[in-house]
Length: 118
Image (cartoon, rainbow, N blue to C red; front, side, top):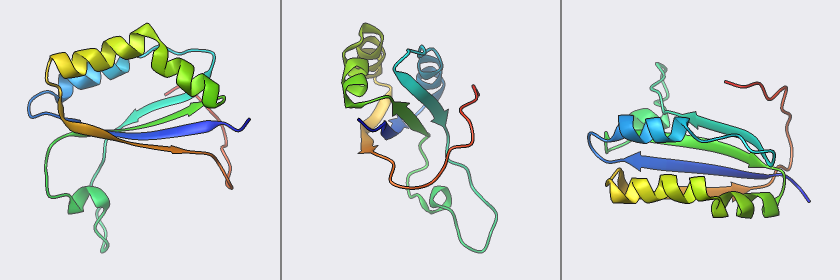
Protein backbone atom coordinates (compact mmCIF):
# COMPACT_ATOMS: atom_id res chain seq x y z
CA UNK A 1 0.00 0.00 0.00
CA UNK A 2 1.53 3.37 -0.99
CA UNK A 3 1.95 6.30 1.34
CA UNK A 4 -0.91 8.80 1.20
CA UNK A 5 -0.30 12.56 1.19
CA UNK A 6 -2.82 15.17 2.21
CA UNK A 7 -2.46 18.78 1.15
CA UNK A 8 -4.91 21.02 2.98
CA UNK A 9 -5.46 24.75 2.86
CA UNK A 10 -7.16 26.07 5.98
CA UNK A 11 -8.66 29.56 5.71
CA UNK A 12 -8.63 31.41 9.04
CA UNK A 13 -11.48 33.79 9.80
CA UNK A 14 -10.49 37.41 10.32
CA UNK A 15 -8.65 37.81 13.61
CA UNK A 16 -8.60 34.04 14.27
CA UNK A 17 -5.28 32.99 12.72
CA UNK A 18 -3.30 32.91 15.97
CA UNK A 19 -5.86 30.68 17.67
CA UNK A 20 -5.97 28.36 14.67
CA UNK A 21 -2.16 28.21 14.58
CA UNK A 22 -1.97 27.38 18.30
CA UNK A 23 -4.38 24.46 17.87
CA UNK A 24 -2.51 23.14 14.82
CA UNK A 25 0.84 23.32 16.64
CA UNK A 26 -0.52 21.01 19.34
CA UNK A 27 -1.24 18.16 16.94
CA UNK A 28 0.51 15.07 18.21
CA UNK A 29 2.78 12.72 16.35
CA UNK A 30 1.44 9.23 15.81
CA UNK A 31 3.30 6.17 14.55
CA UNK A 32 1.23 6.10 11.38
CA UNK A 33 1.92 9.79 10.57
CA UNK A 34 5.18 10.11 8.66
CA UNK A 35 5.03 13.87 8.05
CA UNK A 36 2.99 16.73 9.49
CA UNK A 37 3.88 20.25 8.38
CA UNK A 38 1.93 23.46 8.89
CA UNK A 39 3.12 26.21 6.56
CA UNK A 40 2.02 29.71 5.54
CA UNK A 41 2.04 31.22 2.04
CA UNK A 42 4.74 33.79 1.41
CA UNK A 43 5.30 36.48 -1.20
CA UNK A 44 8.38 36.00 -3.37
CA UNK A 45 10.08 38.94 -5.07
CA UNK A 46 10.39 38.04 -8.73
CA UNK A 47 9.10 38.96 -12.16
CA UNK A 48 6.55 36.15 -11.89
CA UNK A 49 4.16 36.83 -9.01
CA UNK A 50 3.71 33.93 -6.64
CA UNK A 51 0.30 32.42 -5.93
CA UNK A 52 0.33 34.17 -2.55
CA UNK A 53 0.78 37.54 -4.29
CA UNK A 54 -2.07 36.86 -6.72
CA UNK A 55 -4.73 36.08 -4.10
CA UNK A 56 -7.72 38.40 -3.99
CA UNK A 57 -8.61 37.70 -0.37
CA UNK A 58 -6.02 38.77 2.16
CA UNK A 59 -7.13 36.43 4.95
CA UNK A 60 -4.59 34.19 6.59
CA UNK A 61 -4.13 30.68 5.28
CA UNK A 62 -2.33 27.64 6.57
CA UNK A 63 -1.12 25.09 4.05
CA UNK A 64 -0.69 21.68 5.60
CA UNK A 65 1.28 18.78 4.17
CA UNK A 66 0.77 15.41 5.80
CA UNK A 67 2.01 11.94 4.88
CA UNK A 68 0.51 8.72 6.22
CA UNK A 69 1.80 5.16 5.95
CA UNK A 70 -1.35 4.03 4.11
CA UNK A 71 -4.96 4.85 3.31
CA UNK A 72 -5.95 2.96 6.46
CA UNK A 73 -3.61 5.15 8.53
CA UNK A 74 -5.21 8.30 7.08
CA UNK A 75 -8.68 7.00 7.93
CA UNK A 76 -7.49 6.11 11.44
CA UNK A 77 -6.16 9.66 11.87
CA UNK A 78 -9.53 11.13 10.94
CA UNK A 79 -11.24 9.03 13.63
CA UNK A 80 -8.87 9.99 16.45
CA UNK A 81 -10.43 11.97 19.33
CA UNK A 82 -7.76 14.72 19.12
CA UNK A 83 -8.50 15.26 15.40
CA UNK A 84 -12.24 15.52 16.00
CA UNK A 85 -11.66 17.82 18.98
CA UNK A 86 -9.45 20.27 17.05
CA UNK A 87 -11.78 20.51 14.06
CA UNK A 88 -14.73 20.72 16.44
CA UNK A 89 -13.09 23.76 18.06
CA UNK A 90 -12.48 25.29 14.62
CA UNK A 91 -16.25 25.18 14.03
CA UNK A 92 -17.36 25.99 17.59
CA UNK A 93 -15.09 29.05 17.84
CA UNK A 94 -15.71 30.22 14.26
CA UNK A 95 -12.05 29.93 13.33
CA UNK A 96 -12.55 29.07 9.65
CA UNK A 97 -13.56 31.64 7.05
CA UNK A 98 -14.68 28.81 4.76
CA UNK A 99 -14.35 25.06 4.35
CA UNK A 100 -10.77 23.81 3.88
CA UNK A 101 -9.49 22.65 0.51
CA UNK A 102 -8.28 19.04 0.75
CA UNK A 103 -6.28 17.16 -1.87
CA UNK A 104 -5.19 13.55 -1.35
CA UNK A 105 -2.35 12.13 -3.46
CA UNK A 106 0.08 9.24 -3.86
CA UNK A 107 3.68 9.72 -4.98
CA UNK A 108 4.53 8.89 -8.58
CA UNK A 109 8.04 10.34 -8.92
CA UNK A 110 10.59 12.44 -7.05
CA UNK A 111 12.64 12.12 -3.87
CA UNK A 112 12.62 13.01 -0.19
CA UNK A 113 16.05 13.65 1.32
CA UNK A 114 14.98 13.36 4.94
CA UNK A 115 12.13 13.72 7.34
CA UNK A 116 13.58 15.86 10.10
CA UNK A 117 11.40 17.41 12.76
CA UNK A 118 10.82 21.12 12.08
